[in-house]
Amino acid sequence: MDNKINNFDSLQVDILREIANIGTGHAANALGTLLGKTIIQSVPKVKLIPIYEMQDVLGGPEKVVTAGMLRLSGDISGYLLIIFNLSQADRIISLMMGRKPVKRKSERKRFSALDKSVLNETFNIMSGSYLTAVASFTNMVLHQSTPFFCMDMVGAVLNTASAEIGKSGDYAIFFESELFSENETINSDLILIPDEGSCNKLLESLGLL
Image (cartoon, rainbow, N blue to C red):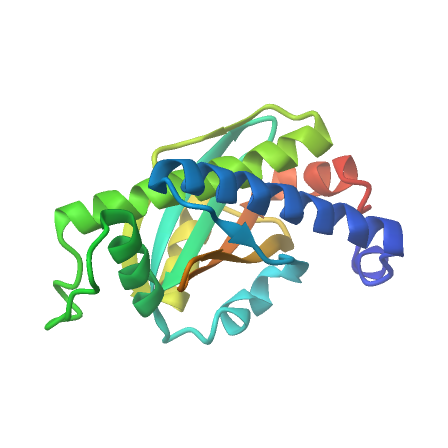
């Protein structure tokens, strides 16, 4: 499998890019409608990354982040993770609630119940947007759970997802996007981690194996 993965042709790369582009576009439209603002998207980045490299891609195992974890079911099983830096999460809350950023006194009690609800709504929008794009390219039926909010180190977040899955596949699909509204930017990392039984199935359906 490694040799095939490392020898993508331009068409296979374009498939992943188009999924990312459509997913980001859906998210921009949904957030724009919710906020009553025009949301502009940048050209998203997408990579197929070995699971063991993921924590380094996200800034190292000890970096503290906020994450939305969603269980996937249907034609494939696994997890979708949506990750924001802490400062980015603060900006999203301010943008969604129409208020100035709040000065945080404590990392431990950084987010109120209302803050978490706002972030979970953002997780829902982002996850639904990307899964719709994946489903349209694979003709698969995909369902997502309600997001589970957590704030922890990158290593702990990934370990929790892996433990819940049981045994993940060798690879994850990593989406990196930027959305712009006036003077605000929303950066997000989305990681689609299929379980062992679904990994090859998903990659084959995308023409990547």
